[in-house]
Image (cartoon, rainbow, N blue to C red; front, side, top):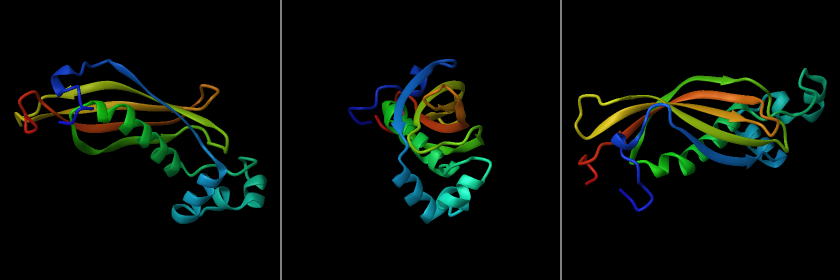
Length: 154
């Protein structure tokens, strides 16, 4: 455990919610990411994007996931005795994200299981990302591994 870790598995309560902060999406970041990882015309070609159903360039959904993960890690996971993740379930993009949007991330601990290992337990959190208008743009369930009191880190 580091000095920033302060919530072990036993300290986490189902139903608890956490505000993970906000981040602004820039066009430069959108283009850089899309050109490298998701070069669809709606992400990299301004003319094609304007003629699309979106009316302008939109962020790759994977960029939205990455930005959400950044806030999730720095504002939630790093405050827990997190040992890593087991993946994400049910990733859904609900609305397009545009340059200049401000994304805010919240989490809700929807399930925790003690499991068979005495060193850690399993968590399932709902991650919700909204834009500056309060519209949901992304939801996903994060599957975490969290150290128990007296687990491997003590």
